[in-house]
Image (cartoon, rainbow, N blue to C red):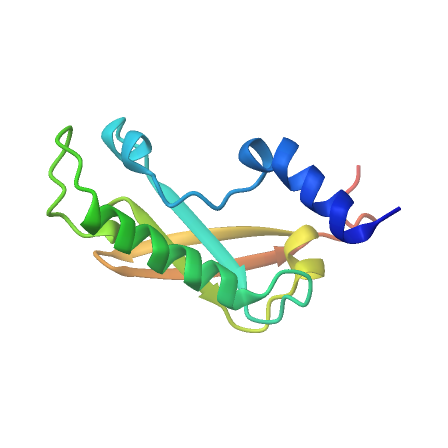
Length: 122
């Protein structure tokens, strides 16, 4: 296995379908889509800064390439919100049900319930 060659080959073949890196959410927005993304600051598997970088990339793209199908002057957070969760890591996210509670315009709280197989079965 040649790591450099094989990873590049995999990205070339499957990347366009599997990677969620395109900042072009114009069709999603035009269709009335709403996106809530959350990421834990304690996530060691996927760098938390990558979610912030993607959110900012979407904002830059949407401002640079306006869409005639909707009011492009509205800010990105009118359809896409990013919540960074203090202390949450990938293991907690995988074992948790996380509920975003909207408390009004621009305000939300996040409630996480950890599931234990022993106490939640039956």
